[in-house]
Image (cartoon, rainbow, N blue to C red; front, side, top):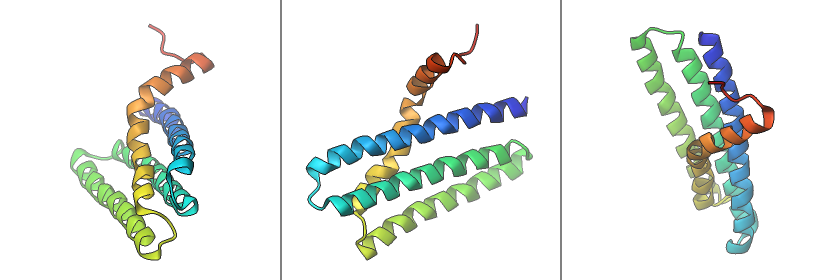
Length: 138
């Protein structure tokens, strides 16, 4: 039962990462026309998308680990892993801000790819299931 849930998470994670990359491509195309400094915009955007992929994979591993633990231990691990993700995102923001190698604003736009991917995930999952023929049978 738990192994089936983990296998389903694997599929969901792959779709989510593909959506993050697609979001990054769309944002990159728009950024080409809107950004003054395209290199700085691109660096910030793809750092943000990379951070979004990190957060998605980290959440996946956190959930898999939580499923094997008692409720109180799982709650503690959830909190500590959320803090790790938060610190990584804030650290990336300040790294770009102070070094100037990437735009902090485009970094945030890249981070939002995770949110957009999560909202669009049911839509893309249905497309994926139609293409692969792996939809749930009722």
